[in-house]
Image (tube, rainbow, N blue to C red; front, side):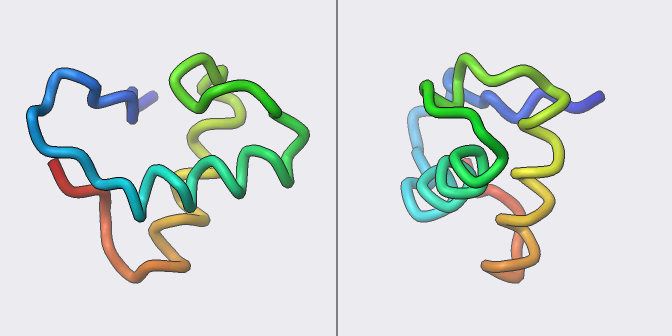
Amino acid sequence: MMDHRNTDSAESDFEFDNCVEEHLRSLGWHDSWSNAPNELLDPATKLAENDLGRKRRG
């Protein structure tokens, strides 16, 4: 599984992160995305990629 928690990057992609958090909330996760289990983070990330038409930057 991929780890989408790229917190070491000096550059952040707030638009993408916010989109992932919205999808995590729709999946029932109401904590920070950085604490989300991969079972929820992977599908939320795929949904964000589909919504925004791109992968996370940074």
